[in-house]
Length: 225
Ligand SMILES: [Zn+2]
Image (cartoon, rainbow, N blue to C red; front, side, top):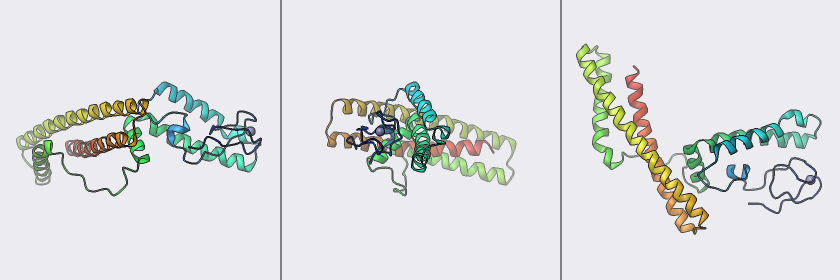
């Protein structure tokens, strides 16, 4: 992270801040700045949301185009780019899942087109049953199944929905636990190997989460038919 940046206007040291403290001019983003740095935060997963929101509003206001109406073209461009980055950074960091996804992305994980996700072993049987019920339900709908048949299938799907929603909640609890381990490790100045282990664990959890999330969405969609 760039810390020795100097203001393009007055050459004062900016320390990577959005605005020069000496002359108030908007500064280009330091090389390698990430969403956490954008808000002056460490790469920790526990974030004070009211403070983040306050900082977001204050930056939004400072970056408002009205404040750049008489500025140079370069400054206007900088403020536009910064505004859009601000919105992306805020949307990402305020959501605990998107926040972890982003952190893993910084660590080189979560690339598009990763290997196809497989059912978590402990859910294999339920996933198999769910897929059967989904097939039956679709067939019964298309061939106009009897009321009692439809009610039976609906029951099955609803209990599967509850089952997978509680799996999802369990995965979220696990993610919250490892997220707080990550923060503790960061505070303790953990080495790269220890950090990598936590990153890998979070990556596994997110893979499982997206698998279970898809199942839940699938059942919901069928039940909404
Ligand atoms: Zn300056």
